[in-house]
Amino acid sequence: MKQLVHKLYARGELSKEELVDLLEHMDVETRKELFRLARLRREQAYGDKVYMRGLIEFSSYCRRNCLYCGLRAGNREAERYRLSPEEILECCREGYELGFRTFVLQSGEDPWYTADLLAALIREIKAEFPDAAITLSIGEREAETYRWLYEAGADRFLMRHETASRRLYQALHPSMSFDHRRQCLETLQSIGYQVGAGFMVGLPGQTAEDLAEDLNYLQTLNPDMIGIGPFIPHDQTPLGNAKAGSLEDTLVMVALARLFLPEALIPATTALGTLHPEGRELALKVGANVVMPNLSPVAVRKKYALYNNKICTGDESAQCRHCLELRIEAAGFSVDMGRGDSLKALASRRHA
Ligand code: SAH
Ligand code: SF4
Image 1 (cartoon, rainbow, N blue to C red):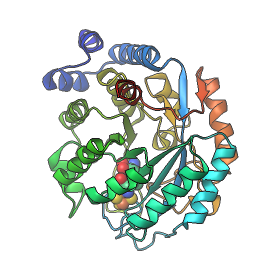
Image 2: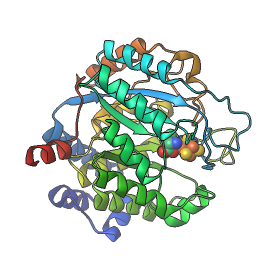
Image 3: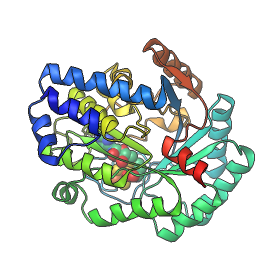
Image 4: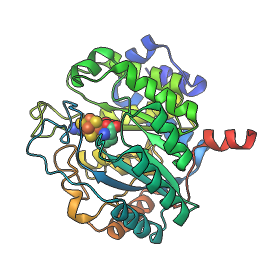
């Protein structure tokens, strides 16, 4: 199995059969070697830098019904909130003061925030902080809206493909379309956004073949960013009693993603930090190079409950920033507070 890892390191790809074989027969020694080589690749691409993004969770309303998610429309017990544009700007001000130069605006799919409202907000943020990047993570919208928001100044867009298995996607997303989500990602890329895709590990019913398909899909899409986190059940969802994804499996997928797409930005996700106290540090050591501390007002944080026991819901933004900086440095990396564009985006700018 170690040979397959060396082949992947040398070539940056494996066939689907080889990948499934590797995932199904991952012994301790092979995993160690995979982690070592993934860390090496990340160092070659990005050195020891870890980029920080300020995450603003601005609405917990969602019109979708993803089976795994605590914000799903069908969860009548969920506490809902919306931040006003002024409140969102205030979070950006606090974040900017703390040194952040990327703001990630994330929400459920909430049409209350119209294209016009979002475009006006983006213009205001850009006018006040011209050197900061704006990342949107607001789910599926019309191509025209995506274009309008890009023209208003949004730089990046995060939308995980969630799973590259059509069967699993359809089982988990009533009344959503597998093809439409992929189309959205392609549209976003063609408009010019730096795009982040990604998936969950350990979804009920997910096989090694499904995970291999996730990596194949990512290699074809070639996104700037890749979000990989464990599935964690949420009590008030139909999957409330399902088993969470494992730390080991998630780390393996992070490491493989680094070897398949050496130039990608890969966050050490909050879900990994929730699964294990050192989950994020471990992810940084096997190829991840981004962290996303929370800038949402403390009063609303617990209400943005995607899954059970989400961490960092009680701390002030300054505490989160400080805590993560200490953790990153203790793990042997250095914090970069810059915009942190992907190598792919920087290269295409040079060629423009
Ligand atoms: N509504 C937007 C953005 C917010 S959800 C969207 O869906 O794109 C952000 C991410 O949280 C989702 O992409 C999903 O991968 C993750 N998520 C939701 N529920 C989760 C759960 N129970 N465990 C782990 N991750 C979850
Ligand atoms: Fe809504 Fe996103 Fe949760 Fe799906 S994952 S229910 S779209 S917030």
